[in-house]
Length: 86
Image 1: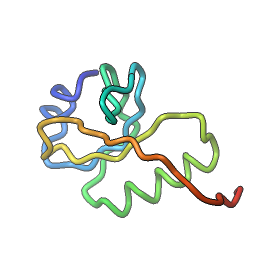
Image 2: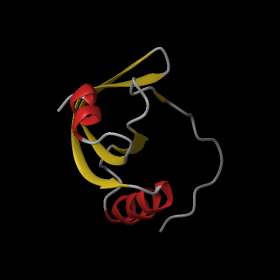
Image 3: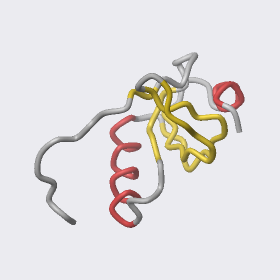
Image 4: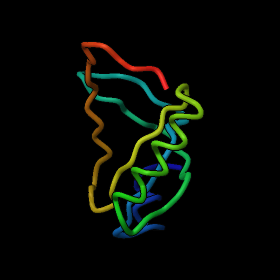
């Protein structure tokens, strides 16, 4: 699914999505194809489910984004420091 389609199907919602086809360009993740995992009215509910799913499988490229945004602009971040496992 494309972001434009998700916006039309789920207006004014928080979406937990998985990138199916994506690449990096100029510090952003460009998602050409996505899969909607779940839809929420509340961002904190979306974040809670993201955390649960991410804890089970860190290899999945998942994001939470609101459909009010015309473009899916996900800035890449470099993490520096110590990460606690689990």
